[in-house]
Amino acid sequence: MKVKLGVTGGKGGTGKSTVATNLAIGLSEVRDVVLGDLDVEDPVDHILLNTELMGEEPVKIMLPVIDYSKCTACGVCVKVCDTGALLSPKGGKPFVLPRLCSGCRACYFACPEKAISEGGRILGYTYFTPANVDGAQIKLVTGLLREGEEHTSPVVLAARARAESVANDVLIVDTSAGTGNNISIALKGASLAIAVTEPTPLGIHDLKSILELTQVMSIETWVVENRWGIGPDDRVVETARKYGTKVVVKIPYAREVVESYVKGIPIIKYMPDSRAGEAIRKLVSIVKEVI
Ligand code: SF4
Ligand code: SF4
Image (tube, rainbow, N blue to C red; front, side):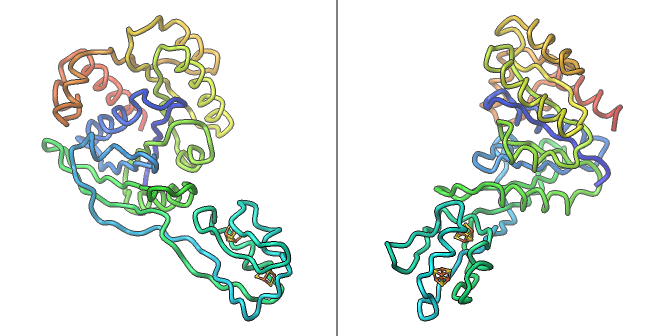
């Protein structure tokens, strides 16, 4: 991998995946692009690219297996488990609640009787999908958490590792919304982040959070204002300036963007000469220059 870019945004639903998929397609004209969809609770890049996920690999984590013939009911494992995945009735032997277990192995190491061995369970999956979008070739790596599971980070880590292992040139990661652990895991090693926001009070509030995070991570960050026109944008511009960056592109709120969703064709291919298509092409062009 020669360069890693992150597409992120504090708030969900700002159009982060739209920007990531269009940017990947635009850059694929001149570079070999891998797009990593690390929004593991709700990955949608494959839907926006109108392709089926392929190349499934399970993401497994450790699940403790207790040998009750060795267990003395000392309770040490219950004390070291910080997710509440081990419970024991008063004075009794513990049992495991698999959904709460993060696979950290603390109980395995702590058990004085060596009564715990390593089992495993599937937490989610990663996929590798070569995608051809109207002649544009990109490789898509996707992380997907199994329904009902809570521990997202191992799946984000596995998907990031798979994306990095297949990226020879440019890797674009599409993060989940928010500013939590999974965002920093996804953005680790990125030389440029693109924070997608919208001109609403919530969009501006969450933009501050993501700009604070990327500042702490020392990642240069540009702001893309999506749905430009649905509200006054002076506060987006001001917020970007306050954090030492700028709004590089404003993507108008336009009918053609909605139509491109309905058709399942990214706007850069569906209507490249529309106002929204032009804004995306401008973004592709300035990213091309810096990488
Ligand atoms: S592996 Fe970690 S999270 Fe799972 S039961 Fe053991 S201590 Fe708790
Ligand atoms: S630490 Fe080991 S011996 Fe103690 S309760 Fe847990 S499994 Fe049993």
